[in-house]
Length: 370
Image: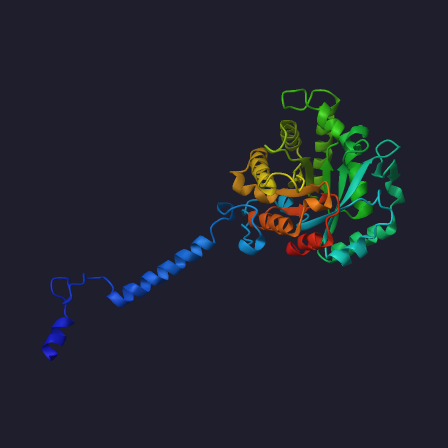
């Protein structure tokens, strides 16, 4: 017995008594190693990039995974609003109480619109339901509310342009005077960022039909605005975003050309916010999947405009703002799906415009992305 034990513990020609190759694990240890490898493989599959997973499924059935930002992204591109950004129009709602709204919703970031050119040359004014209210008449409570947001780690930005009135860039004669007007808005309100929403007139007239901004006055507006923003960004750390309409195939060629021209003249665009109408609730199935497809197309365009390595580096420089035609166009399941899509793909933020959703739907958006 003892001899057999001893022979079993010796190497003979590189093989054990039971025929095991030299350097291999005993069978029980090999089984344990295999089980460990299977478990590790399961974890790896769970941590695959979110875009390998189906889009826009309810958050309850998909993990909200966020891809870390690349280390070489400029600081100006990652600052500014995050999570859920609440849109408000102080000019159209003079009784709007920012501080009370923030307490009610828990929102820490706001987009305040719209500021357009006032009656005097190169001055700004809030758009109202019928005219414009000069920024000098801004209620002090609004400024106090913005200050309170800042103290909580949030802030408010100002949306310049929109569908009513003329943009400041069209009325200020030089980049220097326009930069001063922008700086006055930032200083007066304590704005954390500026959002540019080109007016419908500019978008229409600046496209001569070949997808490039025209050579006339509207091209001059784009260049003047870009140079003014560049001047302002050299003076202070100021994120600048652009809100542009999203089509089924992404951004319109004229908007792509406008962003290229803006970047070429020195302005750093931190985020492109996609304004996406939501189809009515009675539309064919797949409403939100069609939105996701359009967003993916726009992300590819933004990657090319910004000179990034590829779409994977552009998701966090894109935001999504669905526009509701009616409150019924977005239910709680839709809201969870949108929030999950934004979180999984690491979009900069989610906002909402148009019809006010039902309170339960709004709470899903406010709190899921808080």
